Length: 331
Image 1: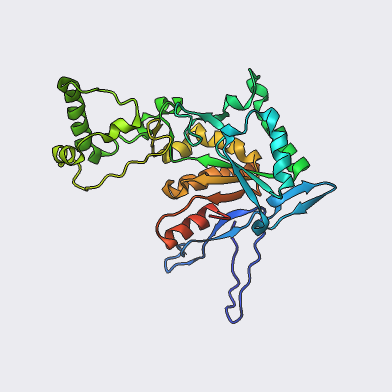
Image 2: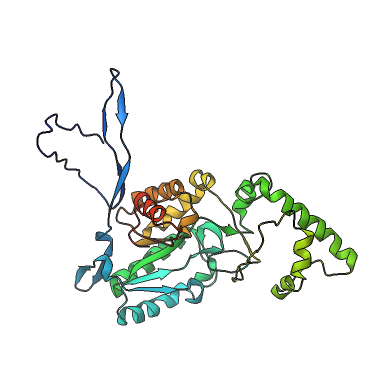
């Protein structure tokens, strides 16, 4: 959408822009260049419209619209809430306690580690939220109905996590997109470290040591100083701090970037736009243009999508860039 500015600059110029929905909008100024027909484009900038309408929860007999600062959010670990048939009682208790938004950890099918944030299939809900077998064709409808119950009967908006920067190591998506994982092919500086690991691994059995680690403590029984000396050519950066979270052995950390943007993953995630809001997990490690593509698609489904994010780039300027470009309401 383009607007031509008036030629009289002796008084303030005002341009009224009709905004159809919440989110981030980009704008810039262009002007005629010195060469006939040439257009000079100025610096791009952004403004964000908060999703105020999305915060209206039905509290019988009328709808009450909440300001963003008025949200009282309860975070729950989805796999601990039991099947859908139990959710009504959870909603009722949360509503009675004064909460106005229910934050779900990812509801999608989990990987072998069973970590809530180790998503195996972005496009399908985890079967454990349904008791027994269920017709796949009605799953989405059942989830939409229970979200309606939370909203209309208990005054609870629904927020869910969106995970884009990592995926379960046993995800079928990785079979179709092996390039998404870190490897010497797409990350050459890993080659020395990988060679050292392969060399070390091949010698373990010959030394009468167990070649498989079945428990986490087995990762920490080595002589760290001696082993670092052996592989010092690959580990010159010094200290390595392992993550000891619940998914350390079961998650493959990947960098989907353009793959996510162009694959069916975005299409699957936008189905989650039936929720009132997204929390973007590890937003700071997602390329901004990938997040923009996902949220643009989601806002076509839900124009008043509330967006919050896990965001700590270490730079206030970079944090602000993410907030501006993705249209983040809270971080």
